[in-house]
Image 1: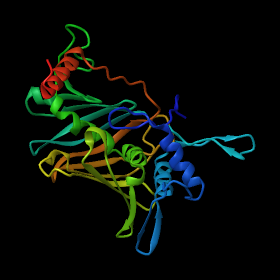
Image 2: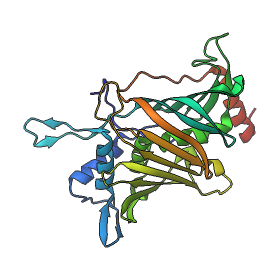
Image 3: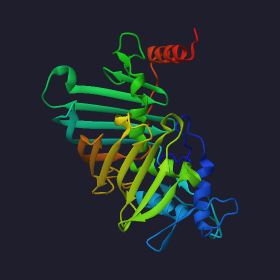
Image 4: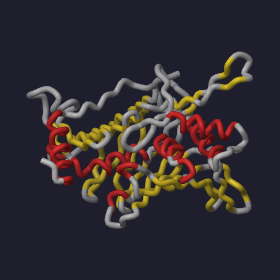
Length: 311
């Protein structure tokens, strides 16, 4: 069991809506009956799909939910989303400008607040491109010469990368866990259908990622096997992604019953980006922090002031 459990709190800018998770799955427990239009059914292939039940099944397939009973079980507490922080260790092929190279991949992430650090060590090539650390937290993005760079004077360099904010945040929400969280948060805007015999979940992202539609395909075990993102603005080609997930298992050193994909293949604008074999996933709520370096905060504030005409 994870050391800490947290209720689901999610938005694209500040994660705070635990009641969404409670409401969605309380609705599913009540047989899909609600009095405020919360129920959305999509008829396809002669079959009615219940959004809340499908999302609950997908969350349970991943092992995201923990349930508790009171007393003899007559009263049931809300479901608890146990996925907040996570680390992923993998190796495989990464692409830079269409050129492939073998690499080690280490992602550390959190959903409260939405943050992600991706460290890639390439094998071969020039020294400058061999090791990269790309970090995002809410509306801040920066590159690090080493983990924690820029926080202590003289310790590493943190380079602001504001234009990369949305692209990096998107990586967080196209992971299987992010898909379920964001689909629940989208409420009635989330649609469920059957396509070619598979369950498909479609929903819009919000906040800084508004204007992007996510389409996720589930397999017969309700696991997310494919995620596609489509921006309303066709010029945002870096936000058009297609990611495939397979070989699900509990990849933790300490088993947690949380399923994670063992193989991840991502394309962006139709071009390959990643082809990774997962070695280990720590979903046991590891202690991870993503403090924003002062120079990154200052650069972001200055850029924001410039856009609004401020001083």
